[in-house]
Image (tube, rainbow, N blue to C red):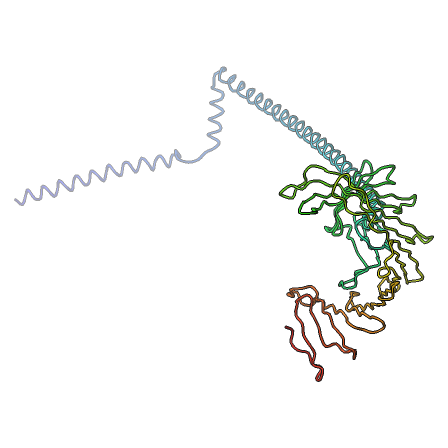
Length: 461
């Protein structure tokens, strides 16, 4: 047992020794290779080896190398040529783009200039047309407005302003002064204003014939036809429904207005064209025409009306009915400064309606007073007009035979936007002692009285 164990130990030791020897030999060979320089970097030896290898190369391999170099050179040359051509093409494209851009810009500028010239030309033509229209209206409107007002209204126009062009597209207002016959109106009943550049008026003109064909205002609505070089104008007014003996008629008034060489109205013939009226108040079949009025005008050297005559005919209801003169009224008008006098004479004579009317104005054509004396001596009245700070009538004072018997107060509600009425008419009745004891509000239909002892007013009832 002892020998066997010793044998095992010895055999193991021997194997271990052999392994050491083998391993040591391997390392010794590696060291020898390192010492011999197998793993050292020697570039001169490599170069020499390469030269030696080059010398040892056969001739056909050398030609291959040279061919490769030529191919490289050709490739580089072709690349340069392609690049040069690309650059040239790029330059040409860029030059063409620039030329096209310049041409396009020039074309745009030229088109813009042409469009601008056309716009300016059209603007000039448009402004010229507007100015021509305004000049036509400025020249023709006062004549037609004067004729239309004298046709549709029975009052005297003693003064009217000239229509002017404001800026390049606006007409000034048409203001005219009349001699009123009613003295119970608010504001300024003797002064009327027609706005020529806003909604209150509408008019149409024929630019080719240079005439106004229609005018619509708050005072009248008329169309116009022209004859004999515009010295005769037919004015067609709005239609109305009239009745006689329970029979309805459709009436279309129209007037033939005659002008003198200065454009003043000298005669107006007023006609009526009668039609049957349908059940729904529309125009039916035509019946006949008849003459209803003839107005004649004369003027003094100051271009003011000096005489005015009206012939009234009775209305006709049948075609063959005889024309009958109802009455003739002549007015003679004189003026001295701001005072105008009208002598009225009726035919047949009417002493209660005939007489003298006197109007007094201030320098701004504000009416101060009106007086009437009839031929019969029964009317001797005078009305004094008082104005407020806005220039509107604040009170009418009615005098009869030298004494005040009543007044009319006009209360304006300008400071109260919620007021139901823009103004209120309040009549005041005076006693013999000159004190007012009774007031009647004609607008609200309320009244109040004053105590004669305390002079205190009662509430409005």
